[in-house]
Image (tube, rainbow, N blue to C red; front, side):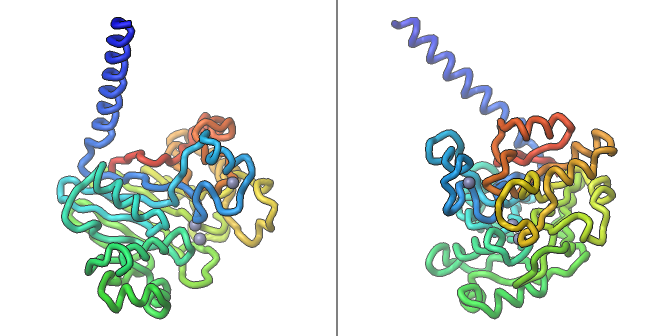
Length: 314
Ligand SMILES: [Zn+2]
Ligand SMILES: [Zn+2]
Ligand SMILES: [Zn+2]
């Protein structure tokens, strides 16, 4: 009995140590991107879904997944930014605080992509009902900015000075500090309330592309393969695996299927394929789950999948 207990103690200690080592190894970069959320706007589990995909959350097989967001951390300059204000932003900012960089102001800036619910509604947490402090920088494109200024409850965040809107321009480089810069660029998407942008994020060592939402690669005036080749990482829209995934008309919600992106890159080198990191998964997409056979097959071809907690040096 005593020996068994000792064995258990050693085992627990060993597991804890190896976990810690892994985390330190992951976090020893000076500037890096950290994945804070990977799900499509509706999150995982998804409202109204009782099918296997979401039943597997309620029966304890799969964990909750946060809505898409990337953290950008500069340990050297003690600064941090978040790309996207997702409905899970309250916990995502806590992750940044607890696991990455603790400092007095909660965030140095929020970069918005567009006015769909998974990408800006987290701003609500900055208001009087929740955080209620002042002068949080929110970076937005002209139509996005206009939308926030003209519509409640967002306009109140501005009038109460909870947030300060900062203007972004298409293809215009923004210097964040002496190590980091970012450039927003417009992409075709269902722009009911705002334009939609992706971001290029550049550090001194590496660079990344972030395109969580786009209609189809062929409707963009840039060539995705060429754009991926120019960077080290490309976090790309992976809403659906293929066209059989959901019953609703796919033309209502166009996205490049993972299968289409994989086909598009099929003649490219392993090095190029390796730069593609899929993100923004619908609850029905089997590749949202780490051990799905569909995901394993695509990983074997050289493509990667974003997971919450992954860090990428920049
Ligand atoms: Zn989205
Ligand atoms: Zn589901
Ligand atoms: Zn969208």
